Image 1 (tube, rainbow, N blue to C red):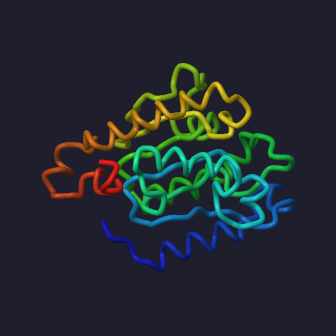
Image 2: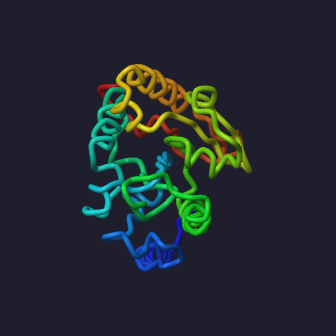
Amino acid sequence: MTQPPDEWESLRQEICECHQCPLAKSRSQAVPGVGPNDAQLMFIGEAPGRQEDIKGEPFVGAAGQLLTKLLEQVGIKRQSVFISNAVKCRPPENRQPTRSERAACRPFLDRQLQYIQPRVIVLVGRVPTETLLETSVRMGEMHGRVYHRNGKTFFVMYHPAAGLYNQTLVPTLEEDMQKLKKLLHSDPAPAEEREQGQLPLSEFFSEEKK
């Protein structure tokens, strides 16, 4: 369903001006997210890092470069997906956001999901997985798997930063991205959505990688 563009811009402005938690005092700027606001594929990370805080865009540091490489390996076009974080401001020293900080940002994340209505939501790391699946997280058990909650389809994977700190996890990240590719090609949308003629997620793959 097409939403009024002014509603999207209003949401973005609210995020940028938010002072609901102490992170607003230490940030350079909030990081609402980047990508098409009607994307069928949405990635949700944990929180902005130093480079993201400076540039105002998510996943632009080393972890973002690895994410781009992983997407390219399976032919997913980064510009076709929406990328954001569970928390929109950088925690000091890149620590993990607290539960209260996540709770302060949760309404923004919920509104983004409601507006975009992605067909698949990729939870990148422990924080977004714990936040949106509302469960204690053991990434070793949950990564590479699909979960359905409240009419939404979620796919869990390690944060690319984990691959930077532990090179042995890179093959796992690559394998999980291959699983995501298969999920997208399988068209995980409910039957009633397919009957309405919505585009298959495979439309978001580069032609040469299909």
